[in-house]
Amino acid sequence: MFQKKLSFKLIMPDVQPFLEGPEPDEVSIPLLGHKVTVKKKDEVYKNTRIAEHPEKLRGDAHAARDGVVTNITASAITIKKQDVTNPVAPRPEPVSLDGLAGDELAAALK
Image (cartoon, rainbow, N blue to C red; front, side, top):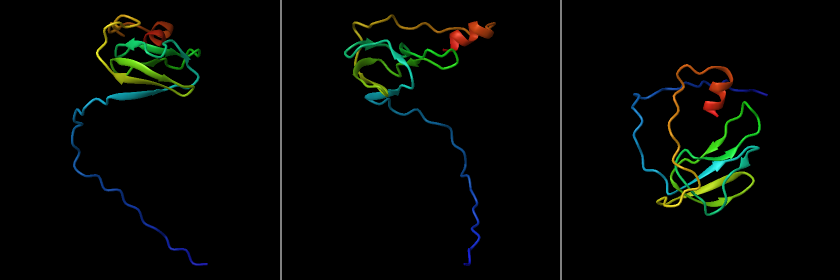
């Protein structure tokens, strides 16, 4: 049987910078072996830890936006946009990674 050899060439257009887009009204944060630390109807700030991973080298899950937890399944946590008036945790403070190494760095990144 005759097979034709295919030729493939990828052409890249001019590169443009990313533009800021609108934030979605609802986000779904995937869970992969995480232990959920929030409940349905909890209000959370952006970057609040919403699930912990038991493995040292796997990251925890954090809220991608301010809002209220509307659904929790085995595979994801859904957060809907809402003004936060009664959060389950204070707004997370930024962490400086300067000078951190080893376990301290791993904990700060988690």
